[in-house]
Image (cartoon, rainbow, N blue to C red):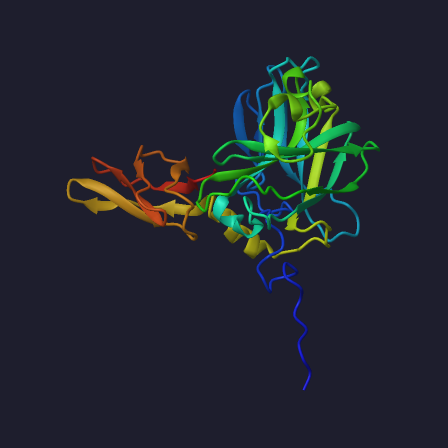
Length: 329
C-alpha cells in the first residue's frame, strides 16, 4: 500500500493556505478602474488600495494583463501617473497597501519567543528605477513597524523580489476582525519619512525611519508601476507562488467587498415598499451599501453582515441595480 507523504508545516494546504495575501495574482477587480484622490484611500484591484496625501499627484489605478512571461499569471495591477508631483513636501507620503485582520495572523505567534519570520515575494515592473521601500506596519496596541529597501534596476522590466521580515517577540496580535497588518509598498515620501535610517527590525513606530532613500514615483506622467504574484508566507524562504482559482480568490475578496450584479425589486410592505437582498459571502462587518443605479431614490439598510433591504416610504417600484457592499478595513 502506497503511503501519502504529508507536506511540511506551512507548505500547501495541509496546515492552511501558505499565502496570507488575498488576491495576490490580481485576478479579482470588482470595482473596475479608479483614480487616486488627495488624502484618500482608494481601492481598485480587490484588497489593494493606494493612500496618498501628495498635493498634486493623480494616478489611474487599473487591473492589467501585462504580466511576467512564463510565471502563470494572467493579471497584474497598474498604477499609471496622470498628473505629476515633482516636489514632494515634507509631510507627504504615498503607499500601495493591503490591510490584514488580526485573526488571520495568529499563526505568527507574535509577542512570544516563538514569533515567526515572514517572507514577502512579488513581481514588480516600473519605468521609475531606483530604491523603493516595503513596510509591515503593525497597528495593534502600540504601533510598530519594520521596513526593508528593494531596488528596481531596469526600466520596464519584470523583476522578482523576496524580502524577509523577522518575527516580533514583543508585541502580540489581537485576535479580531480589525486592521492589524498594513503591508505597504512606498511610492513617494517627504523628508518627515526619509530623514532617519530605515527600521529593518521591529520597533515602536517612528515616521523618520520608514522610507529612507525612497524614489518619487509621481515625478513624471510617463511613470507606471506594475505588481503581481504577491505572496506573504511564514518562514525565511520564498516558495513558488500559490496559484489559487478565480473562484477561491473571489470568495476571499467578497468578505470585504461584493458587487451583487443584477437588480433588486421592491414590493409592497404596508404603505411602503421593501426589497431584500443577500450577500454571497458573509461580510467582515455590516457593510456600507451603495448601488450603480437607483432611479427611485430607495434607501438602503445594511442590517446584517449577510444581507439587508432597500426601502422607500412611498410606492415606488423602480429597481435598484448592482448593489455593492463595502466592509473593507
